[in-house]
Amino acid sequence: MDLDAFKELLTPRGQRALAEAGELTGADPVAAATTLRKTYDAALTSAALTQAGLRERARAKFGADAESMYFTPHGLEQSTRKEVAEHRARRLRGTTVVDACCGIGGDFLALARAGRTVTAVDADPLTVAVAGANAEALGLSDRVTVTEGDAAGVRPEEYDALFADPARRTGKGRTFDPMAYSPPWPVVLDLISRARRACLKVAPGIPYEFIPEGAEAEWISYKGDVKEATLWTGEGATRRATLLPGGHTLTATGVQAEIGPVGRYVYEPDGAAIRAHLVGEVAEMVGGRLLDPMIAYIAGDELVDTPWAARYEIADVLPFSLKKLRAALRERRVGNVTIKKRGSAVDIERLRTDLRLHGEESAVIILTRIMDKPSVLICNTLQPA
Image 1 (tube, rainbow, N blue to C red):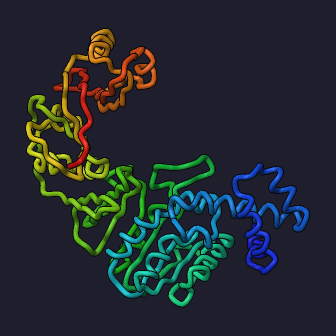
Image 2: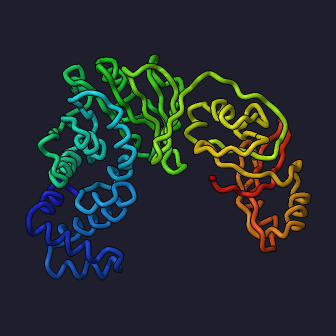
Image 3: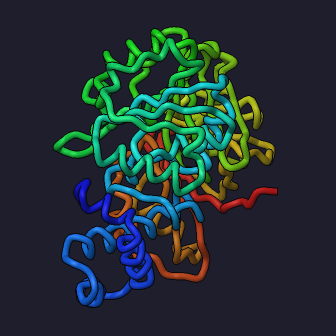
């Protein structure tokens, strides 16, 4: 979809085409295109069907807002889930915010709804048009000004706060190297160095050496899935993990987890706590200890209900051996297994096939190391209290 085709979507004729395309969502693509081509030209037909498909995909991130929003494929992929954007908007202090690489606008929409006045900037003309249309569609154009420009030209010192979400894709696909972000990492660091306070969205796997000195690094998990990391300046230096939608938050205290033997239970910390190096804090919370100093599984003797870890009751502990594991599962009549691993090189799908399971019972298998020895825990799942 090019800029001209998108602009036509915003006309009354384009809106009719988009509405009709929405009604055809899920139909055979060729049949849908044939139906629309009876009334509209090829370019508008393609733009309408593309936009209708993107709106359908966007429901998972934007909920009901997706029905009236506009997207580009790349913009939708990088855009922030609504609940995460709202969390950040609540945290970011200040009345005026500049969004230095706004994309399709998922974050500035949350900021505007939280009462901020936002100047949004993006270098791509089509993305700027889409972002502006989203502000208009959701009734926020009085709080958001979208302009075309280079992030390097933004003057963050003129605003209360800076928000930046640098693109993390190159011509070869997704990149995990901050130096390959767009704008490049040195430009991003210059922007946040001149801002009173800043909120920077980055990939959850960002190397620790890229975290600016004095910044807070926050890893955010949504329903158990680590979505992203956020770097905050002007808020104090710490490491933080946040669980959404519950809003639970955990910060570093410096506690070190003890190493100890297997107990009755094993806890698997949420990925945000692991990324934030807060496994010691979770272990202290459940009164547990690590099975291995390098592995984020926590053993415990007491059953503690916490949002920070999944918990399992240990039925058996074995040195890893396919033959012994198969026999133990057969003895328990286990026909269905959930296989987890950390610190193990075993191929999970190959193991699932090699186990040749039969039976009516279910179990959780944890492949890990215990004091550097390959081991397997056979467990029962425990539901939260």
